[in-house]
Length: 132
Image 1 (cartoon, rainbow, N blue to C red):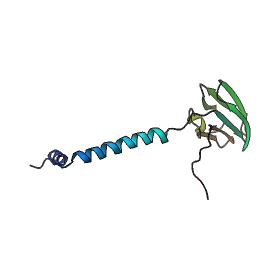
Image 2: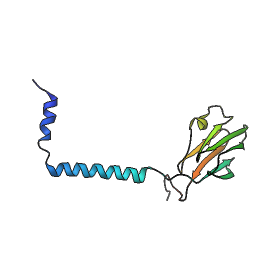
Image 3: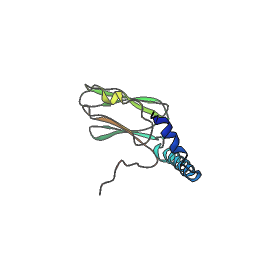
Image 4: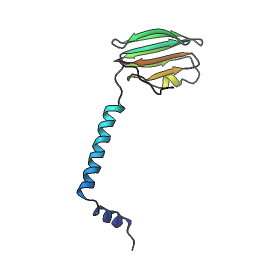
């Protein structure tokens, strides 16, 4: 009889107190780093672009609807409770509408066929990557 559960339990008797302490401290470090570095700051403003040029910079403090013209028609951008989304777009596939609500600095929604984008910015500029 070969029971894999018993073999796994037998391994546990070789783990000493220092090993458990190392595993526990490593787990705590991973949780702290995740909470500190993974979550982004909340956005303060939204930069709305149309045709590659800045159309408007909007503060997220008040709820509003913004109509942005593009080559295919009007894109509607909603600002509600410090969150932003592209509510409607004349583009064929609606990827930017399906992206949903944006709320952290650095998030962006692109409507490529209509050449409209919304980027959220905070107090510090965040970079996905740096080029040399």
